Image 1: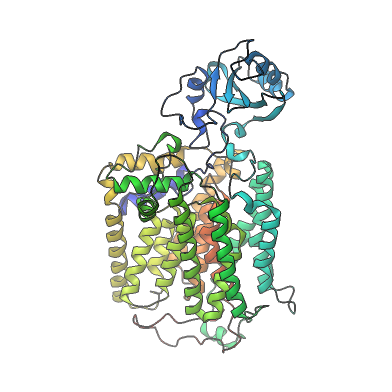
Image 2 (image 1 turned 90 degrees about the horizontal axis):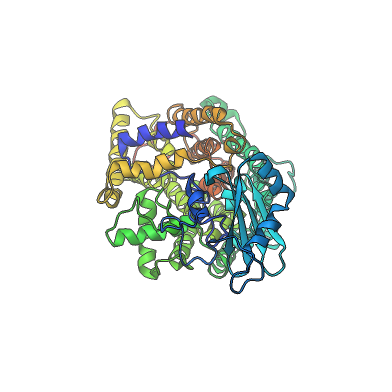
Length: 609
């Protein structure tokens, strides 16, 4: 991760450095915390546990209004007021657990501290000698004296690794919602006449992330993390395979690509889109929770309006919410102004409204891209795929900012489908917006810059690249004004790239198994893929661009220290555009290959797969 951060930091500093890491730690609102230090970041930084153990709760560590904040209690045989058990009794119960006894035997000099946890629970935290690191945690019921939870290893610090029901996505994880969505996603595209179609395998792989998620929801991290990599690797290979550019003579001799055949008529599928959109919005309003990334957007939006610093001064209950680019916070400004904010981690209606709006935008953009490629039928099919895919609903139900990444990248792809100077400028500006929302889309900037320029003369190509770069830098400078008005370059860099590159996470095989040397190799390969796809000739139509963008993002995700299911919507819409867009329209002949370079005032020529 450090190597990739260094490479990207150099690129950003050459353009404009107000960027933020995309792979931020996500902790659900209201999730039970191991200590006060883990409220915002999901992990307890070194040194904080000692202060908690000694009872030194500071404003930088805890939120006074959080009823789940552990309150240290002195050891005594007398139960506190309104409690049945004493602190000595609680410590004795925890100390008899075989897992904790083994832990203390392994860590000589370790000790346990006792805390009040909510109204009816106790918490016992075990620390290494000197209280530098929390190594064990036990939750005990005050009413029954029964052990409710016991955690060791990374699950002490990472509350999101404990499988708390509904911590991410609430009831969308229920089988009675998730499995029907999987069926609805697959069914319209299933061709019973060709059951072994490659498209069927592609769609099943997209759904196979569900297996990893099931293990995650049951706190089996050593199964969930490795199981996320086979589908990522398959999709990377599949996207790269779609980029092959054959000679014109070979393309002329090949038969037309298979037709996109829908099991239900397109008008019915459009009704399905409307129904599923209504279902998603209703579920968001009535059932969803706001995790820390959505909360961070609302905080940042309010700080922009009030003319306050964006970096280095977030509230203690989301201390590291300032790890994103300024566009992320600017996108929440209108919603914070309309719906307001109480100043605490409440229901956050502004975050709900923003997530719903981003979701609607993604649906609309997929329809527009599909209609431009092959007509309204493909547009409806792409929009339906988005609203039926369970992981896009998972992001919506978590009210995260990840759909915003998809929206900006899709808008850039749509702009790139046009060959005009205005579209090229829009492409550059949208690339900057995507890159300054989260970190990963910056890898798409070279690819979006060179798309469609291969058949231009050298002079026109240079002018096109200059126009793209001017738009990119101009928009980047404009949206960075709120950040640089109050924060120095050093502060922004420390709060974004440095913070993200210096943390460890068990949510990748690199962090889970300590494979950091191999992680560097994958990071270098991801950089090489991004550069190669920008300069090597490839399929020049929208299918090729979408596949190249998806491959770039997937390659970047393979090399990050912290990967989570909320990042699937970054590449899913691009992958589905490539997978469905490569199929021909049965109502019309396969598009012909352009015999001459297209003018900038004309649409990009379509190329059959």
